[in-house]
Image (cartoon, rainbow, N blue to C red; front, top):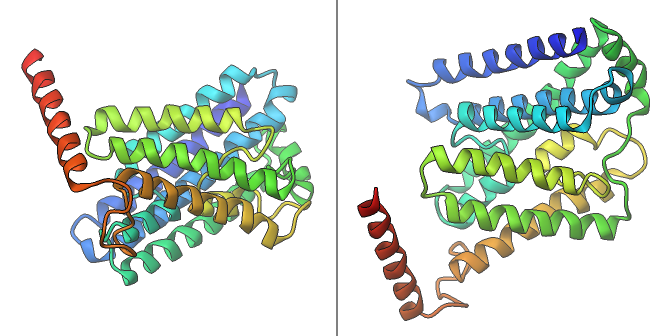
Length: 283
């Protein structure tokens, strides 16, 4: 229980840091890329602690898989609530660029900030483990040099796992992007938790290049290039196909709709508008 209390304090410290930075940036919208930095920092720093609870706590502390899954869900839900539109995910930053919702400079700044945040999140977690506040963290500190890779299959299998999970995630995310945050945030947190748990024997389904960089690129077993193929190329390919299937084209590349006719798209929008209106009348 002392290990969980220490972890809770660590999570609270990470959340407090992110909230403080976002509060200071409220009146400086031109520095919005720093929000992506804090979002990525929080995601990596907290997920590394969740990994510690999974790897060490389940056998040293007697914590069951249900506890670790609940902790991961709460971390993802808290991240979604606090960080809002700052996803801390380079795939989503590139998605905005492909949809003509962000400029080249903005996208490059966001992606750079996300990777810097991920790297600092890794350093923060390592420093926290080095304090050895509990037996769990002492064991984790001894295991740092021999961390276990999240990629438990071949590079090809890993690529298709990340690709398939990213495709599902982004298709659902695109369909929910116009919905209320009260609906979108919990559903995305549930989906991320489910996919991560389902793929834990393959790649752990990070579907986030900067998150994967912070969590597993420093572990032995595969080269940097092999990790990049699985966690970067796989995620970006799944995201690109999701945009194509959802919109019928990629606005940054194609002007003409490649999959859906204008009439079909208009009819779909009319059906959606009718259903939405009907739902509002019921409430």
